[in-house]
Structures are given as C-alpha cells and as structure tokens.
Image 1 (spheres, rainbow, N blue to C red):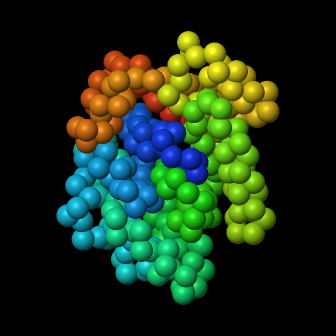
Image 2: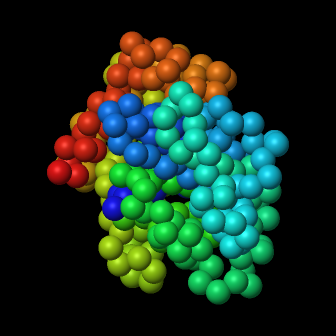
Length: 254
C-alpha cells in the first residue's frame, strides 16, 4: 500500500516543485514505485517532468471532477521512471466547479484509493496557497513534507501551515501528520539561514530532516531540460542531496 506524502507550503518559491520532481526520481532510482500528482494549476511539475502541459487532454482537473480515473490520466515519465498525474491552467477553474460537488475536500483521496496498491509512494505537489486544491492534497495524504527556506518570514508562514494541518486533522483527516521539514536553497555562509535553521531544530527536533538541499545551479537548470536533476547531472550536489533525502525518508519509514 502506498505511503501518500503531500509536499506543501503556502509560501511560493521555497522548492516544492523541485522537491516533488527530484524526490520522485530519487525514490524511483532505488526501485520504488512512485506516482507524482501535480496539483498546481501552474503545471510546473508537469513541465519539469518533461511533459508539455499545453497539449494535454486529460489531467488532474478531469480526475477531480470525476470525469476520468487515475488509470485514464496518469503518464509514465522517462527518464524519471515514475508515473505522473499532470496538470495545466485548466485546473484553476476546478475550485469553483468543485464547490457544488459532494465531499469536495476528498475528491483526490477517493480517486487515489483504487490505485494505492500499485505504488510504494504517492507524492502530491500542492499549490502555494491554502485553498481547496491544497485541502484535497492534505485530506488525501498520510503526512506532509514542508520545504522551506531559512529566512526571516519562514517561521511565521510555517506557523500558519502547522495550524492548517491541525485543522485538517480535526475536521477531515485524523491520521495526517508532519513527516518532516526540509531546508531548501540553503547557503551555509548566510548567518541568518544558520540562525533560522537552529530555531527550526530547537522547535521541531527530529521532524527537521538531516538532509539539507543546497543552492545549486544544476537544480535550477534541470527543469529547463524537462529532467530531474538526477538525469541532468548525477554528480551535482543537488542530485546527491535528493538521493540522501530519499534514503532518509525510507529509513524513517522502516
């Protein structure tokens, strides 16, 4: 049965999409069966996986509305070696259309139930907002990975997200928990980054991953080629960091 992890942070530009793509590829590279769900209307996870979002007839949009099943919309991504449920701008209208539907917060959860046995991990890339799409991701997930930069406003935004997860736990998904906090785009020469990192470890303890994702040009380049960084430059610090993260997640799951 798949372990479902939502990758979420309402703040944009913190590395959610980068983490989604590269964690999926890293888990797949060590033999895990992985499904990656793009739940962001920007479709960056789709494009970064090498799929042209503009020509797609079937996406997560149709899945949420119940027009197609997961089997209809998922794609096999190469060389990432994972499956993808893609998204494009069409998804932006889903929130309005789901308002009148029953159990609108559980549309994704219900859709994924039929294929959980097909995968070891299902990763959900949530949009940078606390909206109905993100709520669907959180209701479907067993746990949440929170990528974040170690900067001034990070802790305040983290507090809002933690409170949202608590509300989801009370109202919709009693089993959801925080899987881990991932420090991204980290520059060890930055004193403020070090201070925020120390605060995170002080407040969240072992919920902070030991793995740190560094600032790395190869990570920034890879989406332009439609590749996970593992297949753009396997020896880069970014690729090695995400492989380390995959192994850390596996170790804590055992």
